Amino acid sequence: PEKGAPLPLLTLDGVGGVVLTPIAYLVNPGAEGTQVGLPSFGFTYVNARQKNVESFGVVETLFGRLELGYNASRFGTGSLRADVLNFAGADIGRDDVWLHTINARVNVIRENDFGTSYLPALTIGVHGKINDGIGEIDDNLGGLLQTVGYDRSYGVEFTATISKSFLVYGHPVILSLTGRASDASNLGYTGYTGNYEFSAEGNVVVGITDWLFAAFEYRQKINQFSQISAGGRTLIGEEGDWWTVGLAAVVSPHFTVTAGYGHLGTVLNTRENTAWALAAKYEF
Image (spheres, rainbow, N blue to C red):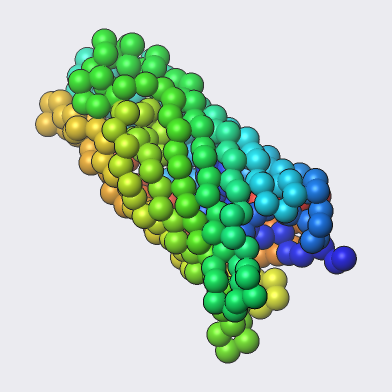
């Protein structure tokens, strides 16, 4: 059978979705009856006012139901090191951290299963994350992060995502909603607290042409750390919800490129309300 479009994309966490939020459809599952799908690779770059992220992911889907993946994401902390040194007199010793994620998602219910025309797809996920760097920063600060909520450098998140496709005036529209249980601070880039909270996120994807898609997504973020200020300067501020808008172009049956704009609110010591993202994904 002819290969389908290389959608969904890969999120910053390395699962099928948009940039920040998942979609219930799995990545490159193959034709009906495929036991071992072909691998997919993705890269995302986010450049905010001070902070930046580079994310690299590989995904494999088995039996058309199980999506497995590994993702490595580098978070550049921008001016944080200089601000902490200037206003708190301590050197955090790093300008970035790496977040390593192992993902497993299972498509429990396929869209329109059981002979219906209204049932959404349902996919549940488990996401294990290890932060390489935040423990060293806490050590360099003499354990300061532990006084505001930091507990450990690793965590496990749980997600449940539903997605449903519609035709609106001949154009496909995909609606997705995700519930997440997590104890991550700033997606895990600043570690984990052991205090699980539930949050909601979702996205809307609209097909403009056969090869061009527009998307809007929103991700609720739970503030896990208490705020830290020194010398009249906020060093760790309250997290805000994130949203993005973007366009994805299907270049070929194997390759997709994406450009987007994001509003990220306060990220540690700076406000990042003007963020640009570029992403690419290749499916074999």
